[in-house]
Image 1 (cartoon, chains in turn green, purple):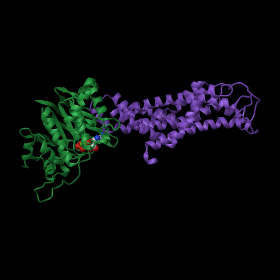
Image 2: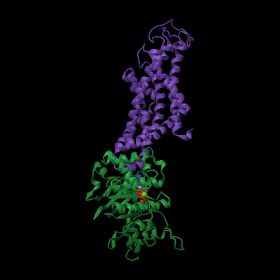
Image 3: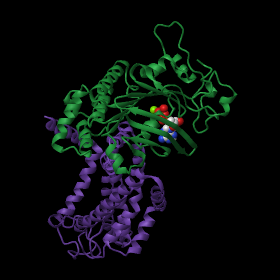
Length: 318
Length: 284
Ligand SMILES: Nc1ncnc2c1ncn2[C@@H]1O[C@H](COP(=O)(O)OP(=O)(O)O)[C@@H](O)[C@H]1O
Ligand SMILES: [Mg+2]
């Protein structure tokens, strides 16, 4: 059963220097209890997509088209009051940089309680909930009287996660939750997210540039490039049967311990989304590109059950 | 436990604030005038509006700052004159500060057409030489203390507006604002609880700097007779009346009102300087 259904979503930023097509025709579905990883280099539109799911794309961005159906309701059609009730309580977000996601002038407890009260939790209960969830993410309750600058990056990210799970949301969007942290803390935070998924049965959208992390943790993987979905499949299927040249390039670029040759890095740069190349958006960097790729946008086709690939040459490349 | 720690922290902060020599001296000067205004009835030796001695007496033990051409005690007039000055400046600064801050918050946060219209209006006001505009408004509204306060307030609204709007624009794109939105906090709360507190420090600098400015503008309006009517004691107007006597050697009639205006303005400027060094450590 799907908790979230995204249908042909388009987001553009109308900047002074041109229109940026950040998300182009993305569709996917998220099942209850599923962890979906959205993978791609930076600039592929992952964060924009994450924000669009809460209808919070910042100016000058606009959602041009599409549906985000949450529990049967298209949240892009809700009025501001209704969407506000969903944000943080039924769909919540953990942002990339824990160093800037908390208000530096306010204590943790004040920020946490403000949020709970805003969502209708009774005043007498909030302190207990704050304690409970700080503990659930492995923090001592003492830190609630601290200001953000008194905490480490990992602790701050735990506070963000505590707030993100406190109202037991159905969907948690984690946008590069570990990118700004050091390696040991990264693993701890990912383990915490895994355990939350088990314990609260939440669905998680993990946004990351790291294919290895996605392969390690997610159930389903969606690879994005230049705002388009390149490949979308269950993790095991994707791992054993990578079909898109971009997915393969990402995979080959991963550092590996047991290999003598250096990882192959993908030459070239992500496209300028104000001025995307015609045809397949990946063709300028694709070693398999042919004439057709420069002219025609490849459709997203289902190559095997629940395995979607957007590539003209998918039939030839195995 | 946390409460005592918080009050301790507050105390430490107060000490830091008062250890700042600019703030300390500025505060002493300003408070001196404030007490003068409050306690005028007690400390003033004579009535400020009646002849209490021979005209044009130089400063002496009896008349600390001499007497004016009508035989009134200049010292008493200085003391009572602080009332009208402080009142007009306080009203003007409070009005322009409140209006400028609120409009700056709204304009900066909402953006769009409203922002463009407000910014255009504010820039137009700002582009005028402030003194000329204050005089013109004051003349148009008619001479009275409250009209002078309104005129001064209008002139300084853009100062607050521009500063607050600029800060809101930069704070608005901070991740913690995005986070607050993602947590479902409504916009009014975001503006009041998450943005305004970050503006208050800069606001304090502008506030005191602006008070110094407003004092000089008030003095100019008074000088032109646009605030109170004689014989009410008023520094600016007394300055005006004194100008004919200076060349004849009666310097005291003009010196003391002029000195009071300058000193009060300097007091506010010192506070402003002190606060700005406090909040930007690299300026220390
Ligand atoms: N506020 C913005 N204004 C203009 N362009 C933006 C803005 N935010 C993102 N973009 C552009 O949208 C594209 C996708 O960005 P983003 O969603 O941040 O990608 P990712 O999270 O995958 O790195 C990029 O080309 C980026 O430059
Ligand atoms: Mg991103």
